[in-house]
Amino acid sequence: MSRIRIVGGTITTTTGGDHNIYSDGNIVYNSAKAITETSDVGISYGEPKNAPKISKFKKIFDIKWMCAEMKNQISAANIGNKVSLLVRTRHYEKGETVSLKIKEIDDKEIKGGVKELIFTGIVNEDGFAELKERLEIEN
Image (tube, rainbow, N blue to C red; front, side, top):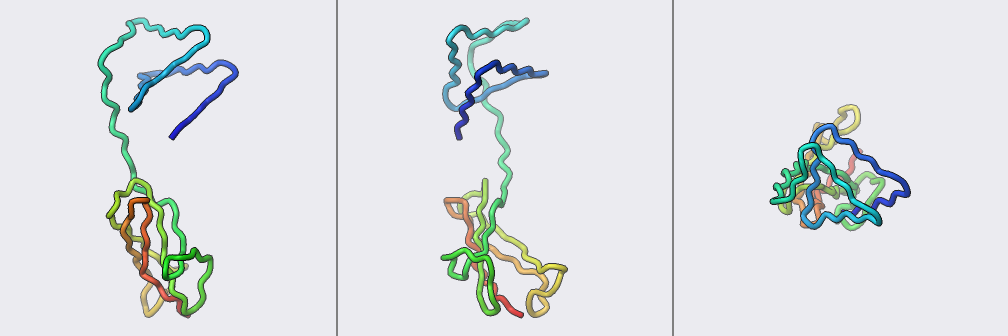
């Protein structure tokens, strides 16, 4: 991920506590005039500290209804059609299992006395899981 910020004026950052910047690469400051760092205690240069571990919460951030063969996204299904789900995840590892619980509106039966269905799939290397239960739409 990259971020470029071009400012035609002044940027002032005030931090009430510590201000830490971490990078896996270089941190470059460039100025047409001067770069000034001040401190009441001193400015240190030396061995860098390790960056703290970033917590990566697993997240499902997109779900699409698909035809049973997982070839086309659908926006509607008719009685007798079979449907599946395509789930896009973030921070899941390849091979992890994703399960979704599907319920009908107002807790109505979906079919044969069943009020909820569970769709399950395995996350691939691109973060997608195909949940191919192929639910058949009924009356």
